[in-house]
Structure formats: structure tokens, C-alpha cells
Image (cartoon, rainbow, N blue to C red; front, side, top):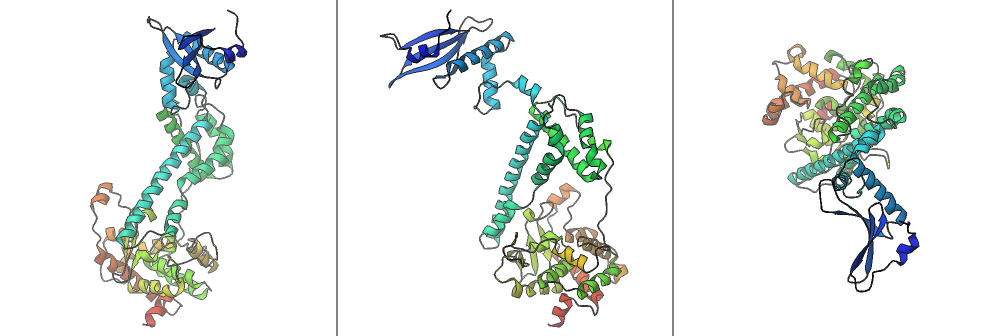
Length: 463
């Protein structure tokens, strides 16, 4: 058969009196002309008879001229190859439709599994991470909306923006992929990639002493391996226990001091020139034993003056569990003091930087102030929580007339219950007990401050 040129198909028309006709181009490829309501359409078909079947099967290849003659012939050869390998074209197209969401009818699953690279799988994995983040963001906005409604106001645009833009794990994963994993491993197929290759690619990072980075990278590779196994790109995840090939990073405890040394911390901070918002945030962090981020982002609508309680939604807490804080008179006086300083801000501790990145105090401001006070070698802001925990768990030693319940001390510190079932069912707030705990701690702090400057003690004296 003489191969027809494209010009032939451009002028090819229906024979008079017919509504449809087929013309064979070779290799089971046909052009079909069909009369429609408005015009005659031209399309390509691949027609074949499956093994152990008598009836012909017509597979649509594409419309002409959208699919050119050359492209149609190429697809016909691909279909011929599929048939020669004993594979069913219709089944392959169904697989392609599922795998590509109907966007491509020539997806070859076997070839993809054989050739897909670590970089390609990593991007698919990361896309899933971003989807999970988006689901979490929308869930947090719903939680915030419910909280706002319960408190009798409308969720603000500032809080929505804070939820949408706060740092999430996906940013760290993206950074480690781009800086440490993809540059060396991206183009290696998942079938060929193995533990020795991954380990070798990270040895230079270990040599620089970035042990925590190595650990995190190993975790990401293992997660990508799990994803690849789930998606069917590999039979088994080959990347578990990668961290055993490297030096284990040493856990360094947060710098802190003993409860009896807190007087030195308060004295140093009293001698140091600190912006009033930062000083108030520091002292409230001490009195509430809160995390720096929780205090810096504290909102006025989370505080109830009448009940003397702060309620922080789970979407803003580590561990995603809501936190209720009963306030001592000293803690409440600090918050009330900030009313005259915060103006119209939604935040108790507004940023004092015009057009700053955030409308609230930088969570690192307190820690920076402590360093300027000369405390950097002794204690960091997070270590204040340890001081409080030690004093409260050994309260008799530090002047209390009774022991405090250890579980309630942990609740004051916003620590998750290790017993997950109990965490779900134990919803008792025990505000009276926790108020007593935090009141004793506040009084201990003010007493330790002594004659040194303290915002809390000054406010108490002024009453």
C-alpha cells in the first residue's frame, strides 16, 4: 500500500450518498469521515481484533487536523507495540485515564514505574504534603471561626492571615529537599536508588557537623519511600533506619537555672533597659509559664477580665489542644497594664515596628532581651518553664504549705497527656486547682524579685 500524504486527507471527502466511511492508512490506522448535523468530521481510529476474540475493536486516536497524520501514525505504532507485548490497549487506556485524571490516554504504568526518578516522586510527595497543609489550614480557620462566634465576635482578617501564613513543616521539607537531597539524588530512578547512595549523598552534610539536618533528611527520604510504596512505584520502602548510618545528634537541654536562682534572672532584667511591651511579655511569660509564641501572639479576645481566664484555641497551641489559663492577680495586672499600651491592636503585645512582618511582638524579643541582660549563658526564655516546673513539683522545699497535683502542673505547662485515651476523655478543667498553682508561683516570683524592679510588683504596690 502506498502511503498517503497529508494533502490527501485534507481533501478526502464522503462519497455521495454516504453518511460515514473509513479509509485505511496502514498499521490498523483508519481515518473515519462521519456526517454530522452541521458538518463532516474527520477522526483517527485504530481498529484491531483482540486475541481469542472475533469482534473488532475500534479505539479512538484523535480528531483531524488537531491530531496530525504524523502523530496518528506514531500512536498507531505504539498501539502495535502494546499488542505485540500481549497487553490490551483498552485496559492500558483505562489505566492511563485513572493515573492522569483523564488528561492522557497514552500513560504507560510499567514504563513509569521503571523510569520514575527520586526527584519526580519527591515532588509528588511534596504536593501531597501541601494538600495536607491546606486541609489543616481550613480546619484551623473553622476552629478560629467557632471560637470567635462563641466569644461573640467575628473572626478578624488578621487572625485568618496569621493562620494562613504561619510556618509549617512543608517549608522545612522544601528547604531540605532543595538544599540537600535533590541536587544529588533527583535524577536517579527509584528502582536504582538504594541506602548506600542516600548515605553517600549526605556524608558531606554530616562532615560539616549538621547532624540534626542529616537526621531530618533521612526522615524525609523514608517518608518519600513510604509514599512511593503506597503509590506502587516501588514494591517496598528501602529507606527505613537510615539514621543508623550516621552519628546521632546529641540532645542539648534548654539552658535554665534552679528556682532559687530566679532572683538573679529578675535582678538582671530589672537592671536592663527594655521596651515596655517586651518587659510586660517577659514577666507574663514567667508568671504563666507559657511558650514565647503563645504569649507574643496573645489576643485580647482570648482574655476574659471578668473570669480572670485566658482561653487559647487548639489551632494556636503546640499539640493542637486548646489551653485554658486561670490568672493570678499579678498576671492579670500585667495584662490590664497593656491596655494603655496596645491601643487599637487586636494583640495584647503589639509590634512596635511600623509596618513590621507581624502585627504582634516578635516571639524572639524576650529571648533577645534576656541575652542583652547578660543571661545568655545561664538561661533562655523557654528555660523559664523548667524553673517553674521544678519549683512547683518540689513546692514544699520552696515555701508552699502543700504539694501540688503533678497532673495539674503539667496542664499548667500545656503538656499533652501521654495517655491518648485519657487525653480525649479527661476534659475536666480543674480551674480552681490550677489557679492555686499559678497564684503560688506568681507570689514566689514577686517575692524572689525583692527590691529589684518588676512590673508585676510595681503594679501590685500601686493598688
